Length: 113
Length: 111
Image (cartoon, rainbow over all chains, first blue to last red):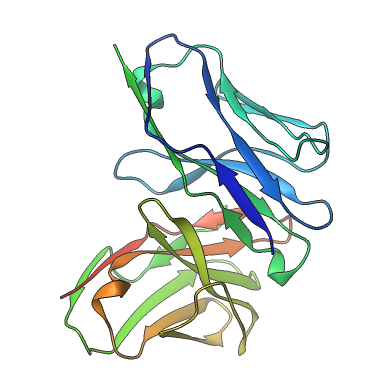
């Protein structure tokens, strides 16, 4: 079945540092890929998405590129802020099973001054 | 956007009790999903429904059942709650454009 693997956290960075959170996936067909963010005490929010190979999703300074050849969708940001501290989830929707979302286990990011 | 309402934000129940968690949408979308979220495990799909009275098992359906009598309402039922069902439960709606909308979650504690 479909699966998503993302790097374990927590990831701790200083403000203005470069961020990469790795995400790789296994799926049949051509899934859509997502990054969700969960701020402390809040629900999940869609951060960005890409629906086909080589698409780049971007939002709030975050970017991720759909790489079919490496089955990856790594999240990057050039300069993180304290307000980016949250848990980040990589996810995909496959081509069957009601197009359900399959999530990674989440990566906690802590940004310090 | 779809508004997704869950019946309770926090719930405390005792082992063996029957528990109902409700999810209501303010639109007419067909696809509704129940997930549980646990630290280190991410979100795991329990059940989903693609129409009234239609349901499919997700990845971890054991110990749960669901009901969808009306299109806007999707209920998750714990027939006999156990401590390992202590978790955050999330309802998700998917619209016709494959956008997903999350409910605020119900944090269930089973004592």
